[in-house]
Length: 247
Image 1: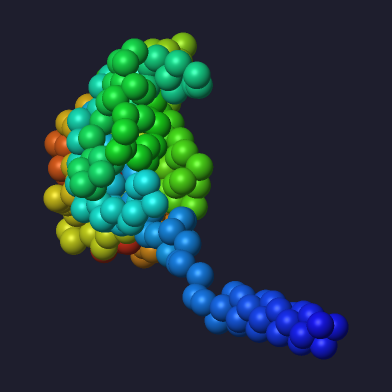
Image 2: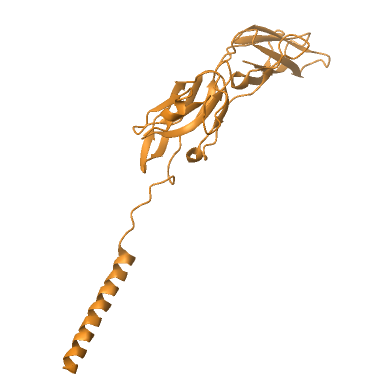
């Protein structure tokens, strides 16, 4: 009886040992499922270089553990969206992608509710001034690695009076610069692309870089939003450097 009991006990112990070894081997060799998260995603870069327009680059976003492709595109911004602060986001343009990768902009007091609906992924929050120019772009945590925010030159327009009225041109402002060699005392810089709004929406300054005489000065005549002429007073073949800023 003792022998049979001992034999049974040894067999039972051997079974437990084999089972334990099999579990260890299975744990060591069974491949873990791949993690689906931010790693490897190419996040769309949201920016704005034109009033009332937001644009984004192609990329992929994480949507419910699935990688969703987003194509390059543009959409309209609502003006006067000046506060994207949590928790209400009451005055905010919220850029989001749905589960199919279609990007839209939700604005207004219920915009955030639309953007965070099931299947949507927020790409950026965009604040705008009264003219619809983007003044601030904030990326949510998912898009924190994106590099560009509001593109272009931010500037304040003081108008034509002595007291600066400080009209913020924001992202609609831009600056150009370069140099040109005169022929017969003048040269036309044209076309400017993208153009300024009109001949009244920008100003230019110019200086003589090289000239036969040392007393030569440069002047600018702005003819349109797409071009301007530069002149000198006596150095017909001078090289003129120019800088223009406006909107």
